[in-house]
Image 1 (cartoon, helix red, strand yellow):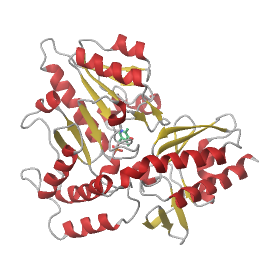
Image 2 (cartoon, protein in one colour):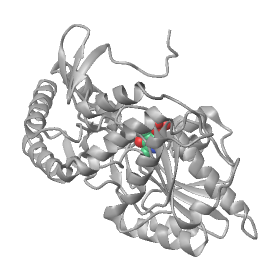
Image 3 (cartoon, rainbow, N blue to C red):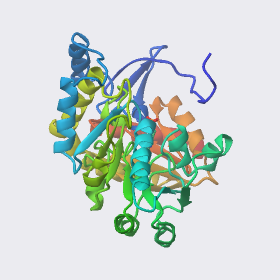
Image 4 (cartoon, rainbow, N blue to C red):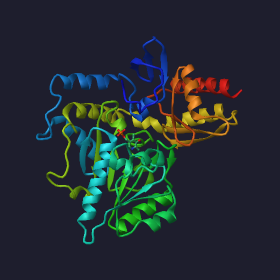
Length: 388
Ligand SMILES: *Cc1c(COP(=O)(O)O)cnc(C)c1O
């Protein structure tokens, strides 16, 4: 038996192709969950199959005692296409966040008076490990596992005044998601992110962006920071980086790249040749295969069509997010997001809810407009049977 930490749907999938999944009954579903923003190229993409098959015949794992060819390739690709100059590979998002915390703390400890306070956001989500949970601003996740890390301080997201009060010479890092994903698709405001950049700079603290959900092209650019006009010192990446194969990363620039030295961190599996082969194939297709280029227009199309179809329901509130990181907010007094997810399954459409009574609309990034139309049609059918 599995530990009962997930409330699973009574569905068991056996195969997939693109945006489609087939279950063990032979039924086909349109997948607008994408493994929670992971399957950027959809299921069973030929480029990923080829990368895995080819690498599997050569090398799976060698440990980080040596260099690996694919690690060099993915590293060059990421550095060439971002503002960052160094990378460390992990196996998951939470592990990337743990390393970002360690870099900020070591840097803080090395300063003259020692700084070790991390400022984090209400309604944030950074992962389930002890450190990442300590800066995940949701009581339901934190409470059962107290005591968590000391010297962390939560402030309301996008509250510029609270940020100004919170950041001090004791601050070693401010961490935020440019678009909060898990808690309901909320974007950081211009004023907040610019103030965060300015205050961290003034106080010798690092600004950390968690782009695990919003990164790797889902918002229409490789990373969201590009659209905000603010470059963080550290970025955490995972989910779509491997397109379904487990891999995450921390990228750093300038001073943040100078903090760690031999022995400060490690991972047995992190950046192994198989994971790096897949990550390279996926990232290369996203960046150079024209996938990310289409995300903005596909997202605009989806938003427009969703608004046309959903505006007839008084329970529909708004569409949040950008690119294909879209959230549809519903009035909690009229309908529960979980009910919509369950009804959509009956229409053979897979969706996942987020906090604040939001349905995430997360197709693969190479989705077609026909598939977007089909998903909206099925969502409309689900809603019409619930709301009329
Ligand atoms: C999913 C997610 C994580 C955690 O990633 P895991 O791979 O599940 O550990 C952290 N931060 C954000 C923003 C996420 O969406």
